[in-house]
Image (spheres, rainbow, N blue to C red):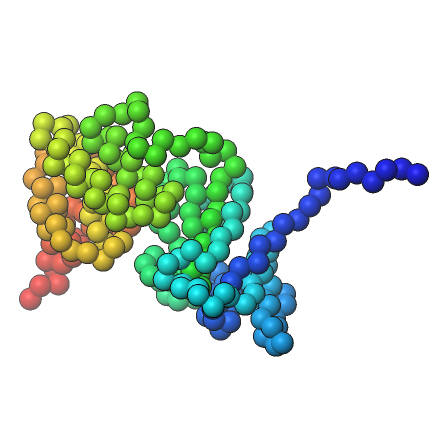
Length: 256
């Protein structure tokens, strides 16, 4: 008799808490998932699939608070993460007319070259798509090979992309700009100001934005330095960084 052996053909499917059946199904179907099983009595159980991703949902604990966004989680490892973000943003824009980047549900911003992004659903679950070759060890205090504003920008990137903490990222850059801004290269200051403006937009906070725009416009930058300041910003076009009012290059033409 041949001894049975474990073979590497397993499938793991997370079962996440579901606070609202209607909201959960609406959001995941907007992403492109299809319902493979739906039951609400005698107990709740949902199953959805998209591509090779299967997510199941069950009855939530009584003390769940979706606003804490710690209900459950799932890691999805992929070869290249950018196409997944592009597909989801396309689907969400088609379903909602916009890409929800704030509140809940939402999809986090994606910087070109980034190795992960997160989908936060109505129940506060996080489905995190991660590129397989992402560095195993991340320096959560800013790369030690960098100094001044570049190190702060790297630190802010970690908080924003890996911890989904835009508020701390904004605080890190505000402090760094005050400490290292005087005497720093104009290109580094521009990147910092541009990132601050984007973070403030994501947080829907206007404090400081007017001053950051004023300082950005006052910098003597080359076209290449302007392009570098916009690198990594998902909403660079919408932010219209080089327009004095933030209303866009056509604003003057629309003024009576």
